Image 1 (cartoon, rainbow, N blue to C red):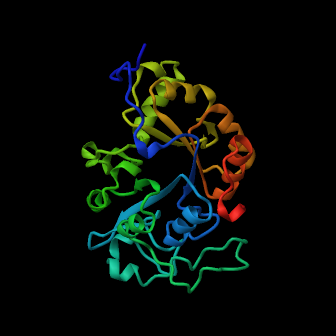
Image 2 (image 1 turned 90 degrees about the vertical axis):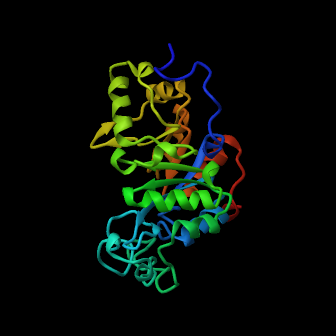
Amino acid sequence: MPARGLPRHAPAPPPALGTPPLLVAHRGGAGLAPENTLAAFESAARDWAVDMIELDVRATADGACVVIHDPTVDRTTDGTGPVARFTLAELRRLDAGHRFTPDGGRTFPFRGRGVRIPTIEEVLQAVPTLRLTVEVKIGTAQAGLFAALSRHGAEARVVAGGMYDADRTAFRTYPGALSASSEQVRRFLVAHTLRLGRLVRVPAHVVQLCELWEGRRLVRPRLVRDLHRQQVHLHVWTVNDEADMHRLLDWGVDGIISDFPDRVARVLHERTGRPLPPALS
């Protein structure tokens, strides 16, 4: 029996989802370069030949759509304070490579090298063909995001996501692929737990989910099967251990979202013969 509201012959997945399994660089590969920066995104494309980059957007005080995960700049820059209180010009003065360390604080190789918080426009220009998942962290970022995607004709390569329905008020008009909200996923997981997953439709093209949440396992082979029956893809984050990558791929997940795209690249090379990326060749 098809899920309620889902056609018996579902359309092909949107081009932004590509051909699984995907190598997805979490925040551009946060274990290898400063997260959510052009330095990370360009390295992900050039050095690690990733299939997709996952990134986060927020809005500045003057309405610019900028790429940063946290509500404040404290953790990732040399500044302090809420993102929403900075103008774009003020954010550009911060060093977004200041706190990145690959070795537990012994070295800070990106400090003072001009790494900045980018706008979504700059990202679309820097990686003009790469697939992206853009996570809207606050509803005020929607207008700037969708305007930029339209200007660049990027809707076919960008998955739009957002954790909370309240921050997704403009999503219904987005013509590209959608990632499910946490509320949408929660409703499906309840039905799935009751073995009624076939009856509850996920109103999205992909579910991007952590494997464990507060000690509870969310991802199992049956979940993958229930989603695939609806032609919904499953990407799992944040997977940094190679043994976990192998297990999840054995279960049939469609994408591995990792801070270490080099590790995913090695696993996919071992499993599928996928060519090693330039940095490993």
